[in-house]
Length: 70
Image 1 (cartoon, one colour):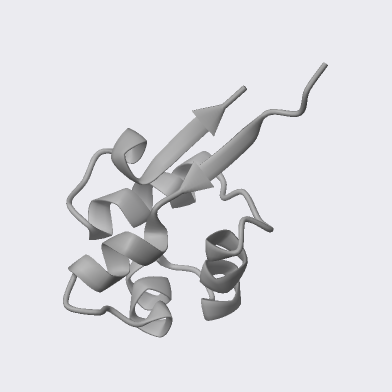
Image 2 (cartoon, rainbow, N blue to C red):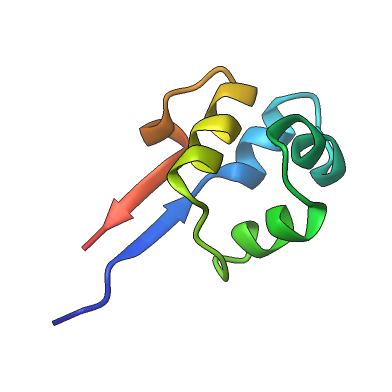
């Protein structure tokens, strides 16, 4: 069975949000800059709560920012 994957568009959304920094996103979402870096590199999958907080920072739906791939 293939491993499921969560992809994200965080980097794109940051740049569309007046080039928001990773630090600013982390502060607003309640996590660390390192967590944002790892998510952008697809090396970390956020908790559902964190995914919702990130989507809300961008005023977007969670499925607009994150995509589940089977």
